[in-house]
Image (cartoon, rainbow, N blue to C red):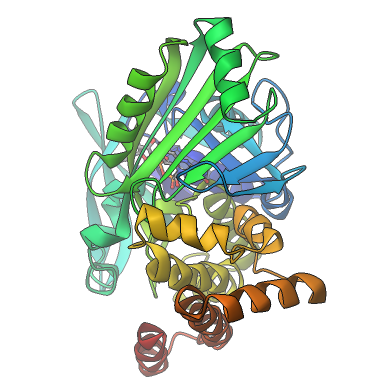
Length: 443
Ligand SMILES: Cc1cc2nc3c(=O)[nH]c(=O)nc-3n(C[C@H](O)[C@H](O)[C@H](O)COP(=O)(O)OP(=O)(O)OC[C@H]3O[C@@H](n4cnc5c(N)ncnc54)[C@H](O)[C@@H]3O)c2cc1C
């Protein structure tokens, strides 16, 4: 049996970033990954706001990890006519294979022990506290003991599901709160065809064209075509099993100029607000496993890295890093910070995800999508709209009360959700958490 201060399960972006922060803080860390290290986590391109790297204490990405854009982010309605242009966008497209490699390497350099091909197959708990995990490496089983276990295994959630405390608190995500997404990077097969696509769609080289609502309110087809990079990056996503792949197949069938695939992949993303509780004695959950995903566009990379930073802040210097009072500090900081923003945008997501393509078009045509609000959503921040833009948007609501009124209600409830999250209980008191959860669920 080996003993560490911390065992982190899962070496995707959340787990590797968490292992890095904890190892830098001086703790002995094992980072345990079921796949080969070079195949862990997301294997496609993800958009991540630049501020989130700084907040997570992770160095900003550079090319070739940084894959653009080299121009504006253009959000368009399903007809492509009505647009919001964000220039420059403060979100970078990240080659996740390279980011995860970098985080693993930096975690190892900081002293973490990376165990790959190592699947966690069991846990041992004593009086409700996780004490040991059983790891299977090529048929050989061994035990790892630690004061703190971190579940960063994404959808598998192997430790969270086994926790006596969290299994009851974290119910499975409802199908309506799951997004199916696919992302692929392709060579440009036919330059003339690609240029014709840019001209037809009125985008410059290196700009992003993100069509929203083409298959219902929560759906997108986001394309970055770059001759400078000689590639086209395509992200598709929507509600319902297989919807991301269907949107991608439709795009590829209609665009014969897209060449051979270089890399990519897909999967499902939880898009409901974070779980109300994601720590238990000896166990903290980070990333997708805690539902730490920005609900308006299903983005979990920055959120997971941020969780690693907050967890390290909470446990550093603690005599017992797995004590519930210590881990609660992480949970409270997360919920009152980015959790509050996620909860606010979950209100927006639920208010808009059933819009039809024509309703999305009508909303954008009416000027109800303020550019500052779109920019904030892209950055995973709360909107702060200047007086002129606020007046313009209110005038648009006045002209289109049937479309605008639900948005005003949603905006009010978004603010209320954010306020409720500022009151997240600061100490582990079950009754206080129950009261807070009941209140939060109402919003
Ligand atoms: C197509 C697509 C596009 C997306 N686009 C964006 C985007 O633009 N921006 C954004 O921020 N997010 C995006 N997301 C979401 C983002 O990819 C996830 O939120 C993020 O990868 C979650 O990271 P994670 O480390 O929490 O989990 P994962 O990346 O799922 O990592 C979990 C790791 O745990 C390992 N594991 C599982 N079980 C075990 C076990 N028993 N023992 C040991 N290890 C185990 C797995 O092998 C894996 O390596 C997208 C998702 C998809 C599918």
